[in-house]
Length: 209
Length: 209
Image (cartoon, rainbow over all chains, first blue to last red; front, side, top):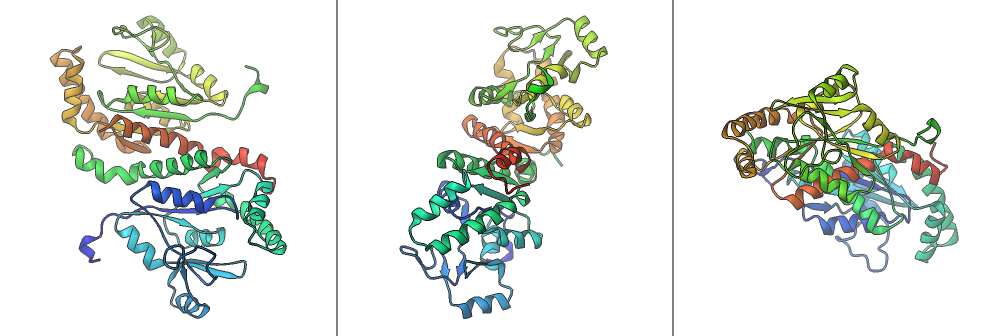
């Protein structure tokens, strides 16, 4: 894209949640709902789960490639989760924002902290499960993880919830429709903020300077 | 209400717009939609329009009573608009907020400036008409005002739009459903802010302190 074509930037939404809080489902619903909201596809060293497609769910890469990207500072954020590495490409993210499109980044608290540290303007949303008991249930019902992994995930969930206070918005996912209504509202409200609307309004009313 | 019964406070939403931008309709729709959102009823010295009810649309009071309330600092904000006085009772407003209910105040830019000056925590929303031409049309179509009043209102509209930059959110009312979706979203998003949710979340997760 040439410099001339660059429009005013989109909004970066960061969504984090402990494992099993329904974060991925909510983000997918948001991308389906808003035609001008994109999901940035993460790079990961983990193996694809059943049904996951390369370039759609994740960019599945080798340890070697991931390390090379890391060395070249190609990640906006990256994290090691349960032994695997996940990263978001700076270039991919910027390309979307420069088109004037919004992005929803479904990343963990470590990744969110890196985005914040880089001083990048973003809206931070934390999704809570209804309780820690339901988190346990949801992880178990996946039926894909060993007991040890389940316990590890629960400990991580507690640590992540402790970080929630660094976020701007809280959503409790005790009901998917209700939680989605909240996520949708946050996106619409953020788009309605004065700072985002000023350009549009100035075009309509020349009395505003 | 006794001190013991006081719950954590509600949110004060201030909605302003130039005449004919559909502010009153939008605020009424919001009050109908949210069971825990109240409309504070203003005091006014103007005469009731056809269909307006005392104690429902406004508290219609004499110049004498209004002046007495003013002298007793009973108004959160008050304004003189087109020769009439309008005011919001501090006591009425506080009573609603202390019940944990939110309030939507449909007031003009002068009133909003007073609330801001008093340092009262509030969310400021400005509604724009699609253009100044539509404002003119809408005022005319009311068919209740003289030509002189219409011109006066248009000049006021321009002055009010100049003040919009002091607000937090902008809504362009070019379509009522779409504008209401935005207002609804701002209310839901403000309720989802960390500060408002912390108490609720702390009850569910004792790891947050």
